[in-house]
Amino acid sequence: MKKGSILWIGLAVGAGVFGALQVDRYLHPTPSNSSGVEVPVWNEARPTLVQNTVTPQAGVDFRQAAKKVTPSVVAIDEYQRFRRGFMSDETVEQKAQSGSGVILSSDGVIVTNNHVVSGGEVSKVKVRLSDGRSFDAKVLGKDPRSDLAVLKIDAKGLTPIVVGNRNDVEVGQWVMAVGNPLGFDNTVSVGVVSSLKRDLPVREGGLVDAIQTDAAINPGNSGGALTDLQGRLIGINSAIASGTGQSVGIGFAIPIDRVKQVVSDIIKLGYARYAGLNVNYSPQLDGVLGDAEGRAYIGQQLRMDYAKAPTRGVLIVDSRNPKIQMGDVLLRIADRNVEQSFDVIRALNARKPGEKVKIQLWSKGETKDVEVELSEIRPASVQE
Image (cartoon, rainbow, N blue to C red; front, side):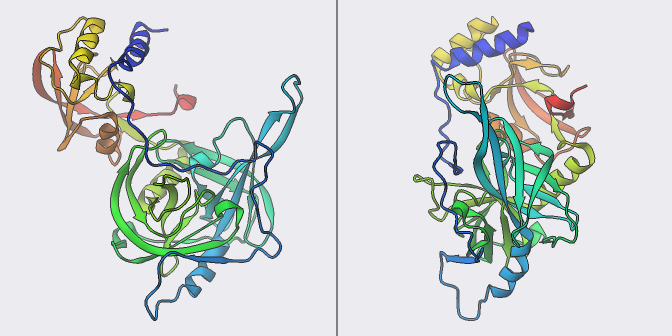
């Protein structure tokens, strides 16, 4: 193991004494059958359920939009292998969780959430269409940072959803959330766009520029469609804020422009392209510089003086960028202040590898501005 990696791990562990991890208030549990308890599913006639969270004004009618969208939304079941018993090596395959997905092409390309198809040892992913047909799905690629995944099923003549435009989305407009909440296929809930440009540090990367809605989103809605009143896809439902694990009217969707970019990258390359500074930093160290004992501990580990270091910023624990050194504190990227690790993701999310950007650093007692060229971040599975 590299010396820098060992130091990185040591810093992250030691820093836990001086600073608590940021509490993730944005929960989105998914239903699980791993305990053997089946999630109730009403499949007799696969009805469309309409779950209103607000009362539409007179003249607002969602029926045509629902008819247009529901054939393009699918249920996704993830199967995993489990040991039959504690003392047995025999394994059994059973459904672990369910979610939703959206058909993007007539030949079976489907987008869903990464967390819908990334639990444990996934042995199989099955897609159930609105007409009752079921297909084994191939995972073309997954992107934990955006919480998106792309699937492919061997089917023809499917009904792809009509894709909308992120720039046309406004606060207050009517929207529909369509998916498979709690196992109830083809469920439509309605609401409005509550807010835009929400940044949430959830899961592995966080949601950037997310759409907030009060349309009911529950476990199983993950990966389903958020559409406008014309049935055009404007986002992929991904997370909720809730103290109960169920909808309280605060849900979040990945905006359609991010969805289109990630899906395009995965289909072409097998992974989503992101730009980075070619450095390592740890969320576990967020806030450590704001504590005197924390600065002293970091200084001892790195043999540097942090007594007069900034109290906010992202500590660089390893660097392969010639203009950034291990132990530097990143303060700004372009016009965005950097105070925690998630700010780096927010600042670079829309940028491309090869772009040049100005950053501000605190380095060995001095604050300086430098220009760096962004490198491409590639998943470990495709690193050369």
